[in-house]
Image (cartoon, rainbow, N blue to C red; front, top):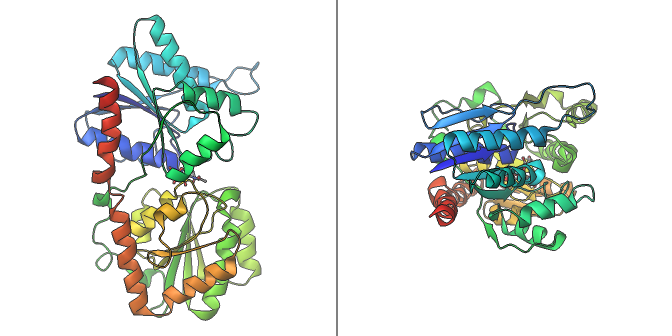
Amino acid sequence: MKIGIVCYPTFGGSGVVATELGMALAKKGHQVHFITYKQPVRLDFITNDIHFHEVFVEEYPLFQFQPYELALSSKMVEVVEMYNLEILHVHYAIPHAYAAYMAKQMLKEKGIDVKVVTTLHGTDITLVGSHPNYKTAVEFSINNSDVVTTVSESLKNDTLSRFNIRKDIKVINNFIDFEKYPEIKDKECQRSNIAFENERIISHISNLRPVKRAADVIDIFYKIQKKIPSKLLLVGEGPDRELIEFKVKELGILDKVLFLGNSNEVNKLLCYSDLFLLPSETESFGLAALEAMAAKTPVISTNSGGLPEVNIQGVTGFLSDVGDTDDMAKNGIYILENSERLQEFKINAFKQAERFSMKNILPDYKKVYVDLIG
Ligand code: GMT
């Protein structure tokens, strides 16, 4: 098959899923064309079957905002024509689904019938997409995609309740490429680089936007480390970084918190981890939690959005109400205070992650494509 993948190329979950999907398809011999404004950060696999097409928007003094959607639609038309693409798979509705609709119409005029698959990821529905500024266009482009998928049941329900949707929505969960999670726990993962022998290692990975409630991460860690000697690894960059750095300093725990910035090797960082914190306001799925679980790390999360579909209460970790940092700290201490119990949670987390392995999920996407193009 010849597939165009449109995504955000940055560290956000939707870009990660789109890139992993493209690489997996290319490994199976399909022709994959990434169409976006920068090479995707997780693209770490080169073959004849992977192509990258940069969408370039030239600055012009008249424009206050650069017309990215226009340039993206034009690029999609150009690439579909040149490489005979059969499918455009767009990740994140804004503005990708709308730009794909425009490309489809332009191609129709040339007698080309390209199929559009839209995968909704979360904030394109919950936070941004349903805002009155975007709602009409998002609803229109969902209804005019050939196939629509969401990454969780929860996001499907959110989409149906916030928009007037006439299309069937398929749920295809996010997935993990287990080849990237080798048995590195004991061999290469030198915990002594980071923590003393008696310390537990706690981690959080996100783009530090307000929806991630990074200040709650600090609160939870502060409460845990009073009872259990521990270190906190913070991976990611974003608007709340300064706020939490300030908070860490104010609480006097600067020596226990490592700010590691963005990383595209989270699997290697997670190998150190005993516990993962994800106290988000909402998560359509929580790919970061799944990545932690694939690295045998139990998860303390909120119970909002799609998180209960990933993290199982009392088995792979615990879920609490948004903002209830006392409960999250209490649960974290419960897991960490007993080594046997911690080991059990680690094994359970890994087993649950295996349910979302790429080999289980990839066939669902392939079926969508095959059903569309025959
Ligand atoms: O929230 C992020 O970190 C980025 C965002 C995105 O779209 O890039 O993530 C969303 O998509 C991920 C992949 O499907 C999901 O795992 C995240 O839960 C979702 N984020 C939210 O719903 C807040």
